Structure formats: C-alpha cells, structure tokens
Image (cartoon, rainbow, N blue to C red):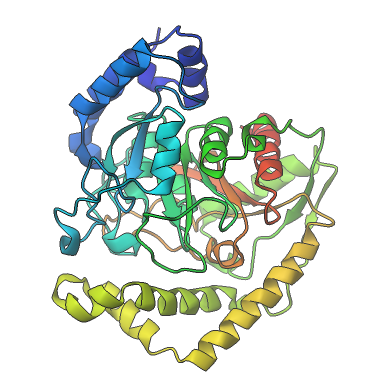
Length: 425
C-alpha cells in the first residue's frame, strides 16, 4: 500500500470515516514526508508535529468529528491561529500570537481537520516572494501569495491547505504547482481573522490534488454541502474567454488552450466564444488600481509606522494606492459594478467560462511570483474560479486552465470542473 500521505483528501477521508486508516498513521506519513522534503521545498514557516500527533490520537479514540475528520491541514500564515504564531510573511509581525482562530480555521477544525502548521506567504500576501521553492524544480517559483500552501499540497506533504486570493494568489500558484485551486464566490467564506489586503476582493479558498478534494474543503468553508454533493452534469455549455490580455500567454499556455478547446468542442453541448464587455480591455488595470487603493487603506498602520520594514516593491504599491483620489476610485468601482452585471448575463447562455489561469509555466526565478493578469478580471468581479491542472509545458512543469462560474453558483462550477476533468484529466 502506498504511503498514506499520497492519498488524495477524498480517498483519505473515506478511509478515515470507515476507520480503515487511523488519523495518527496519516499524520505520521505526512510528517515523515515533510521531514524529507522540507529542506528543498521550504513550504512551512512552522510545524507543530507533537500537537498534531496528539490531536490525531484523540480523534482516533473518539467519535467522528465531521467531513474533514483526521485530515492534516496546512494554513497560510495570514490566518490567525490560537495555538500558533501568525507572522504574515513580515518582520513587523514576528512573534505575533493571536488569541483566537480565524473563522475559516475554526470551521475546518470543527469539521475534524488537524492544523499541522503554518505555510509561507509572500510579504503581507502581496508580491514580494517568500522562501518557498517549486516542488518539481527548486529553481522555479511556486507562485504567490499562497506559495507554501500550493507547494505543500503539490508535494504530498498535506492533502489540503488554506489560501487566499485578491488578484491571483490561489489560482496562479495552483497552476504553477499542478494542483486544484478553488476561489469561492466573494463573501461566501468568512474572512474574520485573516490579514486584510483589499476589502472588495479578498477571498478565502484553498488547494487539493483533485476537484473532489477542493470541493470537500470548500463545502466546509462555505457551510454548503452542495459543493461536494452536486452531481456531475450530463453535458456542459462552455463559453471561451481567453480575455483581453491573451497576447501575454506563452507558447505553453497557448498550446494548452488550443488542445483543451479542441477536445471540449467534440464533447460539450456548446463550446463557443463568450462575448465579454466591449471595454473589458481595461479590466486588469482597473483591478490593479482598486487593489492598490484598498491595500493602502488596509495596511495604513504598516505603511505609516513601519516603512523601514517593508520591501521596496510593497512600498511602491502602497504609495501608488495612497495617491489614487476618491473620485478616480469611485469611477473604477462603478465600472467594475457595470462589468459584474454584463458578465453575469453570459451565464444565461454558458454554464461556465473557460479562461487561462497563468501566462505559462512557473517562472525560472524565485524572486518573481508570476503575473496574475489572467486572474485579475474574475477576482475583481468576485466570481468563483477553479484551476484545473491539464498538462505540462516545455520545461516539464504544470500548465492548466481555469473555469469561472456565475456568482453564487460554486456548486455548479465544481460539478462542471469534475465533468471537464473526467473527459480531459
């Protein structure tokens, strides 16, 4: 039998629920693999092996707790944890000890998950890279800002991990690392206890190795069992939305797109271009401006009181955001609201939109976490997204695409994602 850490979350959950696998054995296999691989991957800020094993033994001795019973969970280090520090990838928060769990962490623990440790984030969940390396090639970036969480799941250190997305911080690292990333509809998951970045876009989600894994985690985070129970549809109406920034796609991304579309055209009931808004060419710039302005507000204390402890890149972002005046910001927000209405009508004709996740394979440098340009539109509009790993690029690193669903239709999006993976995976 393969080591338990190699099981998907849904496979492990099934065995744990039947008491055919102990939580302690699963935890020991995960910890052994982390010990072997962490020097190369550096996914974790902190591990709590003794407490995790003690919790696993307690679960084995007691009743089943919930759908995540006994599953090790890695938590991005911007989520408050009552028993572990939360340092947000910044020296400003060194040694910070919250008194309570973030709501998302509490929900996962209540469902039976065991927090194994805190994963590396970029600086305050922005663009300045942390120490994590790509699990398949340590010379490449795993993406950001949920870098440690994506790498830990991809390397089979843990079956599930929590992340957040404001621009592309779940979907992009999922794409680079070759795992499934789920960004629910904006507001579906409580953000209490998570370090803010941009108030109108910050979204809690996470990572698994299969669509079913991501659906299992998201169902707990949202409190909506439909996310893991909605049956796979018989067919699908797919809108193709390469987006206004398609010229930034690499040859690898373009090849993945063309190969996937060819396959889907032959099996979907509809697979055709989606009519995006006429002025959608500005969407990445509008998202970037709103994010900069809101991040400058969210990090006002750090900006004013701890400038010397911020990176030059983050300082530049905060200075730019602070310079955006109220009228300009209101204009951007009005455009975003109009785009939300216009894009929503596309789902009258299409069940999901197919769109790129990243510009290509993971960058061949550790200081650059990649361009989130293909994720910015859907984060701005608050739509649910799921990244699907669909192949490898020229360097042997993962590539894939994302599906985007109608606001609030996360369960139908995940069912559609399963439909696609059954035909292409």
